[in-house]
Image 1: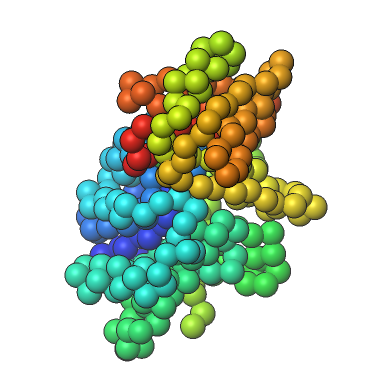
Image 2: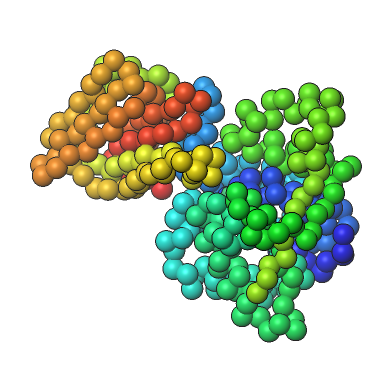
Length: 221
Length: 115
Ligand SMILES: [Zn+2]
């Protein structure tokens, strides 16, 4: 993996980072590269409250805030910024306000790499709105000095339309940190991770491929 | 939250009647429903901190329950409600959790604005 000056990660929900690029980010951190994570919301609208429920609509954001901090610690992220927007409202925010939030962060941090979702291919309206705003912010930077923009895509049509991802990071050897990051988001992932230990023990090929390969597409302006 | 106890919920509904309260009302099938099943029609609605006053309200059914509030000039209702909590801030939090425990509907009343 190329050594970066500074990696800026921008996602709307706690746990977006864990599934998509937590291994990649952990590798950057182990190389001593600073990583800043802008997380726009606290996932207030999450539908998982535990089964039986241990959270309510009102306590969920407080729980998820703690989980996000734990996940950032598991990855080694030292600069976690919670932007205080509200889950499922990002696309209704003022577009220019979002863009300038990201422009300000880029100007402050001077990242060599920015990671977000791929607009058009990331399913959730918050992912899409975040991605569009990041693209607008990066697009405004003069091409010569523009940071790289790498995007996460997972819509059903993403391979058909974008082709295979041009960046695949094999995070073998650092899975523990990724699993710790995902597990940290307990309210959302508790049921999902139940059989993971068994899958690791059985060397489940599909599972290992899924957890070890982090796939990104370079954004085409 | 715990499974609905009808009398307790009815008493809480009665205690808020005739005074100004803040309402949170939400239905959701999740933002990924159509991603998982392209034939699924995704719909939902959300209102937070509507400032209302109702004349009376009722919880009806054998569970999951329906809850309706009669306003001076309108109505609020929710169906599929099966869990509740009276929290330390004096709020009545009602929720409908689906068969896998995921939130499908939420209806909440509070004397102070929701954060
Ligand atoms: Zn998300």
